[in-house]
Image (cartoon, rainbow, N blue to C red; front, side, top):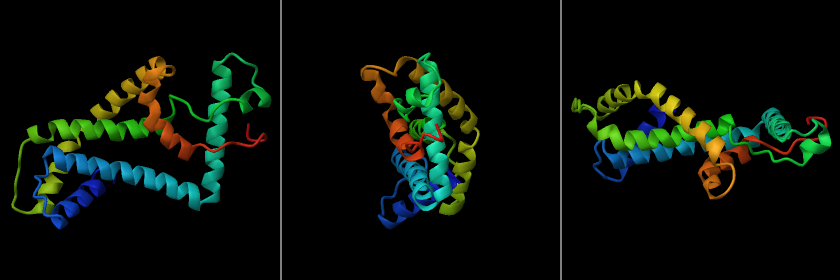
Length: 184
């Protein structure tokens, strides 16, 4: 879903705007990546704002981050201590999700043109073939992203390098909501 739908959207925009970008070109891959991020963020915003139960889950997600931050600060696990903490955390799964999307954009923009060009003469089939060529990269992208996130969480939590966590923190502002004291 997160590969096929953005690639299909990019194909349609490419056709509608007469860009004539090859499926494997960096421009096409950057466009695909933009759609990928749009879908992820749009989905998160949609479920946050439409479903009351999800809002409650996101409050518990915020409580989880506040509790973890309290524990990591070696403070007593009390509501008062946790209340003072932020709902943002550098090792959050939301940050991982955003980073996977960003790393995949970089990887496929860089290597897309080097993958074998199998042109069938049919745009839809060309997209399917290229989609299948990209699939083996997904475990590698996930593994590399995991290690990058681990390094960022360890070395980029303070100072100017904290800006590297910014995209993930922006999405965490969607997936974490300030919890009430009962949730803490």
